[in-house]
Length: 275
Ligand SMILES: CC(C)CCC(=O)N[C@H](Cc1ccc(NC(=O)CCc2ccc(Cl)cc2)cc1)C(=O)N1CCC(C)CC1
Image (cartoon, rainbow, N blue to C red; front, side, top):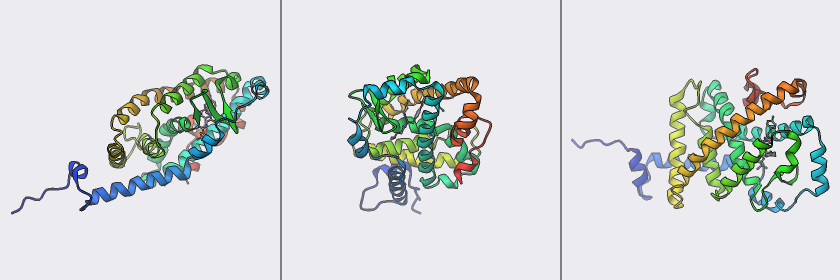
């Protein structure tokens, strides 16, 4: 009686192109789906961002920004941040399997991961030659954000974007890495952890296969070292927003986009955004 051997993950890595097994086909499909979802929801193509990267704010424009009130700058940045998050929500919804998670888990994954994904994607809009980031149509240095009153956070965000730029991530690598960051089965309060874990494993296999193929092994460990900084930046965002809300409760209540309030404050739910 021939012993029946179930295809293991190892088989997946050693299977030859002639007879791809079902796991191989499933990973191929997921890889293509994640690339497509990223392309459709990345807000700006890299080519567009590169074409704009020498459009700098003039000294006068910088002065104008620096004279704006703290309330106005916060409101502008909150709008930009909500924009970026909305695209990340759309990215998640297009990943095969994400909409099959229960509502609670979709919200838990987005609350915990969407800002992390925004900060990874931000490196695509960062010009490491002169430390500027795309903001309201041109590239801005940290000095523009002075009136936010949180230059420590802004500086750490710029440093993080710069450190990601040195890895020269391709769009495919950004797509797979941000999918991996979002579909994280270690997030607290997940109800169907096993389901999230299964999709996470498949995205992990897809990413590892692409890295092997492009001889970029070693990148994943470098990226995971960056995860600690990512978590810190997100915690700082929540802490700065709370401090700002203490000072200007009406601004946050009236002017901040609803999505931002839902994602980073515990009082409302993300229900509206998923539908
Ligand atoms: C073009 C795309 C490919 C890239 C699109 C993109 O990443 N846009 C980001 C979104 C963004 C906006 C603001 C922040 N954080 C802060 O401003 C810190 C203080 C803070 C905290 C909380 C609230 Cl509510 C408000 C302000 C993070 C990210 C963007 O517009 N940026 C990058 C970061 C600088 C500081 C502002 C300009």
